Amino acid sequence: MSSENKIVINMQSIDTQKPFTPAEGEAQLYPVNHVSAQRWVDMNLHLGDLNTVLGWLDALIHRHTQPTQEAHALWIASLITFFKCFKRSASRAKLDASVVFENEPSEGRAQFLILQSLRDKAVVHDENPYTQGAVLVPIANPGGPVARRGEAIVLCFLASTLDDGHISNLRLLTLAAIAYAERAISLASEEVAEYLRTASRAELVASGPYTYTSPSPEVADRNRPKFLE
Image 1 (tube, rainbow, N blue to C red):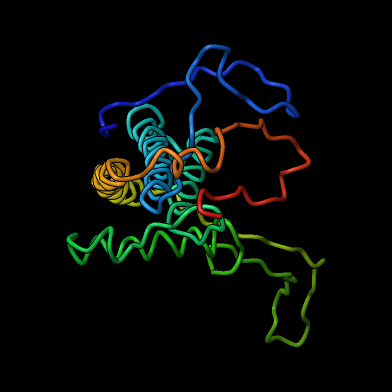
Image 2: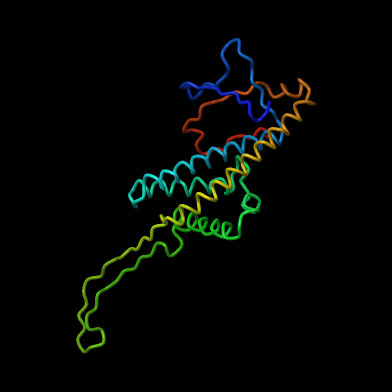
């Protein structure tokens, strides 16, 4: 099957304990247990995330020009979802920034590191000076013979990462990552097609038909299995 051909399964609401199987009379679908098949899946998952990010960023540029709550939510979602593709995952291969942006200008690679730091140390974790706080006490005439001291107060300073430059830079990086994922998908699909030309029927059906089981809260803390496990 070429990368241009896709099977779309319209899933209805499924009982969370009941595996999904094709309707009676339909052909069974068997998983392709090959490293290129796993990469094909991983790249499609990345591409889905990246296209979602692109849509959010376009909404920010065209419809949310003011720093509203909605704009901040879209920005934080974009930043987190973009870097989800580049962070370690137990269930899918991450994108390697040094490969994805190999042909990008050095300025673009530098912006990737800046945005990654904003994600890591300001948005997801609270580590850098974008958030600051101090307990302060007002003292009048501190150098004079009589100083007047007021009640202590706490002040917190929260610097926003929502910035036109950051939005534009993340959008350019997202477009570059999308182009890379699309190339990787095309290559993986060709490798799978080559494998299927030589694989025996016994090899293809050995693991049994593919089933989909709808997730439930009980599996929220578990990693999903890979094809080759």
